[in-house]
Image 1 (cartoon, one colour):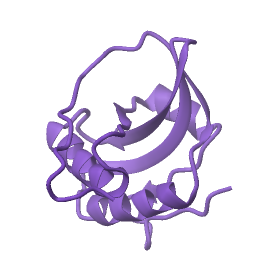
Image 2 (cartoon, rainbow, N blue to C red):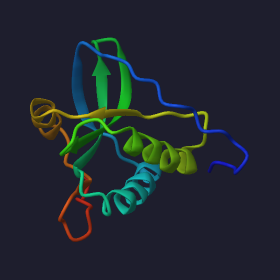
Image 3 (cartoon, helix red, strand yellow):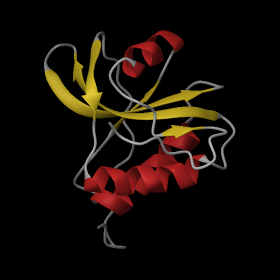
Length: 129
């Protein structure tokens, strides 16, 4: 857990020419994060669906990506909220890559991963497979 005195890293925007989604990222800490993010997202009508996936960036680096499908595209307010929730679960030494998904990118991630949050779903959570 993050102590109150630890500083959360600021967001850094970067472009990745190629991304390949590998599967869902899931485990006990990720389930805690998904529950907290679901609570956060449930009050935000801009967020349609959210995915937590492992991904290969430009064929080189494997990372965990929080993929968000929104009505209005990238939103720095959402990034700040996610960073705060993520930091409270994993601490300031860790990071998560946040990706605002296009329709095509969402179709790709949905092939290997179920959304953990979907606006309008009673509890927001889908069972992990």
